[in-house]
Length: 444
Image 1: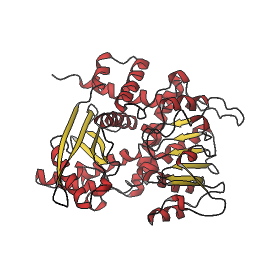
Image 2: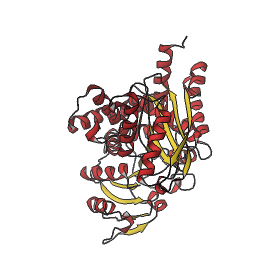
Image 3: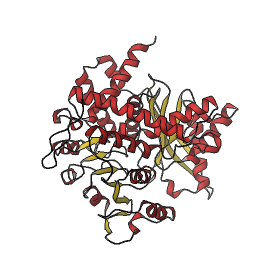
Image 4: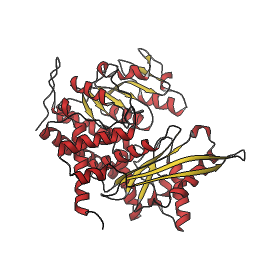
């Protein structure tokens, strides 16, 4: 069933927008992220009459490992950091999820993120369960050698539960391909042979995959394209604003511009710029490569704006690609975009979700829109296991195929159940995980 195109004056609610009473949110809770995740699960469980036993199963992470990480600092002193690795569910396969280094990391945050990885992998149809890891540290205050020692000791501590057939970490906030190289090497030393499949997001030279760096942003663009196609809208000539000009945001800007979308606003942690006539994405990338902020972009008709002002700017497509809880009950009513694609995890609060629905704004949820990263991570894992690597063109084509397939599965539920895309994605994920649990049964 095709989505009806909204009228330009007072748009009718397209099926993608769903039904207000069915709205549910998968973003980080403004109070406690784990409570937010459980609330999301409970809402879906009630909606689909989930078996009570399976409901209890999914409310409890399978494993929680909390470790102490002693690190010798460059000055000879010893600091102790706290780290976590949570495996939420393994019914569909080994656990998959990133590791983040951040001073605000908490166990409840990591539990919630592991739950959402279970959901994301299930939506994409990947043979994985969800996991997440984190270390409570400010990496900006550590030297490169201190970061290496921290990473290697953390890896040694969690090595009892990770492995290419058990749990495969990946980069996340303030970790990168170098971090993954250290993890791979440390784990390999422990098992006595090179094991590239223990992590994804590695450098190409040691088993990384072509296309991985661009995968998250590319996946976001693929679902935007598909949504526009379903809506009967013309993507060429549309305008876009992108909050966050890191990996995902910058790739989104580049790829959207090649499709004829005018990038009118971008921002990073230091501010942003807006121009009705559009911004030169290549110049923005040059600024970032030189270590400058996009806020330093100058030109005719260019206005400096804040991150908050970017969200409220005049545009057709809004891509929040920064942090969680950016679109809230306070600013949602001021958003002018007609479509939001969540490149970040949890950028929209539950209250904002309801307001956006009332405004007939279509929202592509994070567990669908930004799943390109974990999908190409899956491709990397498969290539490592086979010791056979694919061409980048093949990887991008396979990513497009899986992103479109996932979009269509979510959209089908949205239309048949008359719910918004977020709840439709949640329903699809929980149903798939529940089916796996049911088929496998309870041991012994």
